[in-house]
Length: 343
Image: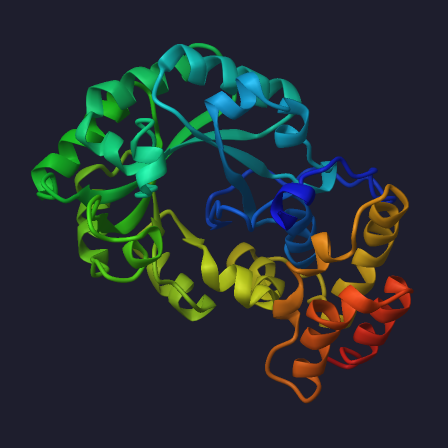
């Protein structure tokens, strides 16, 4: 599978060392399985210095019994960077949080939002909303072990436990364990009968529930997630919330991130062009090829640069179709880059 190949170690890209921006959750890109691997994150970082980036969810079992170096591998330029963990055994989560801290991650996030059957069967994800005391124990175990921030990403409820009182009980117990930052996907999760994809669309968005949570827990950092598509919407939500998290829109329309630093963080740096973003990726891609990797491991994450201008469809075709029959991938990359000139 491409996503697993994409996790293979990649040489460090030859970019000048720059100070890490301070971690801020004002704007973040959600953890997304098979999407936010290290190549995706390296690309997104070319567009925004300040956006907080998350890994795909990594289970404690994968870290403790699998190739931890591959799962934890990242480039220094990806910071600020958070590792999302999936698990429910406090001692295992504590051990994995320590691994993340040692590897240099800025934050560890516990997944309490994924609704898939596979993770439910392992007591991972949204099903944990029915067990707030266990989540509190998990958070405390991690916080007692590491010095980096431990955060939680969750839904506003699950079927059978979807009242506002139960949501407050969950947040209250986890906050008592020391968690100070909650990313709230403003939908319930329906754990039986809906696929993970349907759980991202079918349950209605209820931003007012998340807003009420911020009012009732003003001392906590509440980050809004779910259905946000534009920076105008981000600015509006930031009037009520401490931060916003974008998922699919940030992946499918990544050039949106090019204006994040200026609009949401007050940066005065020039906004990067699409052509410059692709050009910055060329040395990284070249090193990946020299290490035996395939260009599509990286460029599959860059297709969204080709949107909204003449030649965009050809750009996407070059990097998604022609790439598989090309003998000189870097020449093809340059051809694609020419379509971005002036964009």
